[in-house]
Length: 258
Image 1 (tube, helix red, strand yellow):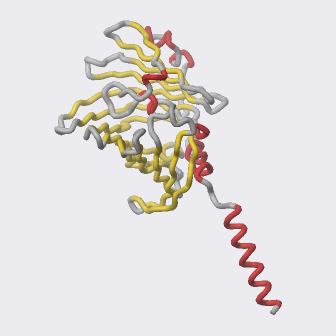
Image 2: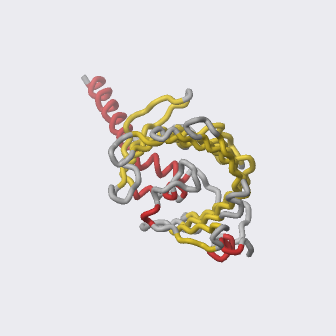
């Protein structure tokens, strides 16, 4: 009787411990947010735009990302080619608790234009990413729910659903993310429009460890409604490079000089 009671108590204790330390959807997304410990990122990127007829157009961009002491990020994108978009520059600054600040410099207009919050769901330079997609999204902006576990490309994943707390502000009604359990990075994400229909699928591939950080060197964003696709390939990447603060300013957007 004593032995049976001990086994029962041990089983209850193990069950309680498993429940106590089980990850929630929010826990998982916080880990995803924290996995990249780099203070800065400098990369050269090829963008391939593919329309529904398989016509292809290419862009080459340079990206600079820097985090501050509050873990807020600011990013700068410079277009190098083709000639029609060369020297276009885009700046995004994360603000926790409110909308990100974003500006774009268009050489044809020779001026910097602020991106209004109402423009957040518009396409960024003809790609399948919107202005909102280009800015960092705070974990607190969504309610995250662990929906189960699945295997994707032979990698065990957490399946997490993220729903905006402010349904009127978000461009998607929900997002479903496949999070690699070992590396804590997203391998796939489905985005649903305001009517609840699937609109985009993002996939991360060719994942390598660079300077100790798991990094997807290829990302695709496909709009399943328009049948348009953007493929993002990183050709050069350096973490923790010393970046001049002056490049993350509207003055640099305007002049291209420090």
